[in-house]
Amino acid sequence: MQKSLKQLHGELKNGTLTVRALVEQSRDVIKEKDGDIHALLDMYSDVCIETQIQKAEEMFANNTATVLTGIPIVLKDNILVKGEGATGGSKILENYVAVYDATVVKRLKALGSILLGRANMDEFAMGGSTENSAYGVTKNPHDTTRVAGGSSGGSAAVVAYGGVPISLGSDTGGSIRQPAAFCGVVGLKPTYGKVSRFGLMAMGSSLDQIGPFGNSVEDVEEVYNAIAGNDPMDSTSLPDARKEPDVIRKVIGVPWKFIKREGIDAKVLSNFTASIEKMEKEGYTIKDITIEHLEKSLSVYYIVMFAEVSSNLARYDGIRYGLSHPGETSIKSYFESRTAGFGDEVRRRILIGTYVLSSGYYDAYYNKANSVREMLRKEFIHIFNEVDVIAMPNTPTPAFKIGEKISDPLAMYLEDIFTVPVNIVGVPAIAIPSGKTEAGLPLSIQFIACHEGEQTLFTYGKAFEKLY
Ligand code: GLN
Image (cartoon, rainbow, N blue to C red):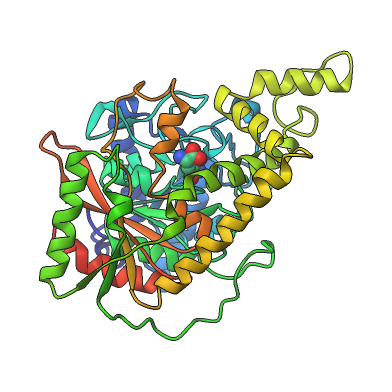
């Protein structure tokens, strides 16, 4: 049983544990386990870690320490820490060194957290298995023949094997919830705009959100409270003004027809059904809901996201930063740098994204997808007048075998069926462990709340955790 942030804080405060000893423990576990799992790409520099240790020690000495002070944390490698490398899982940024701190990093540094290392990920967050990383796959700590999930596979795996109590990932279409589900940890995708994207490498700018992984809902809530908040450096950041406390009606909406679909694994379905029955026994009302446009969400996601990817990745031109293969002309340099620097999946998405944005197809694909997106958003608003949360599995299957889906992009995309609607609509969702298969593979449930309904997710999450 991993210690909670509150327990660690108590020990750090009463002196039974020191910040330095806690960091050493983390380093030891990582040294022991990461050779096999490969959750981490690198540790941050000794100077970076040492500066934070000293700051944390000072905060404990002068009584300004908070629950995150002195806590080691790992960041997905698309989050910038000034003076440290950040590759986004891509060869094109192999030698890139960040020139500023992401807003989430600034906040964590101010609280005295110890930024320990950078986690493996699918290249530029495109994928669901970390097999698209230019630096090798992350294995699932529960079964090393299987994927840890993705794209934040490293961030999930390092928490799952006990290397750090908390980590950060990013979620554009499921990249926090899916690896959390595969690795048996808690993962939160916040409301779009609650956590600043400043200093996060952009994938799909209208979908991306940074969020935490942890061993419990309470730990994830602590990290969320630390990193959320308005930021003038992100134009899509929401104002801080807190809403009234959420009213809990104890009503859960379940889109049964959408869930009981072809391709859903029998173990996932029976575990999800059992979870819902447990909640019903606890006095929650279960409402069978229909959201008409849910079926369209994969299509919408895989148009809007491709379009945004193609425009966001244009900045990696081999001239301004990152890998550079100078050719005879600038257009040749551009081609050669991108061919050498980008992996297959990234190139596939740039090509399709450019296609859906090209004149003649813009209306047929991009605009159409955006209007369906709007209809789905309206349906969600309507549903949340009747239910506190929508419950679904996070994934149609437990963690799959390494190599099983990598040569079939469509099969890989279908894995995202239950997570992408949340990003399209911009609402928050949480993945919480719900037991294991007989073979020991983690299973999990997803709760989705209304816009800025994080508090509802924490309330539901804590109630659900007690049942497993
Ligand atoms: N698996 C999804 C994709 O490949 C989600 C990625 C993400 O959330 N970054 O796009």
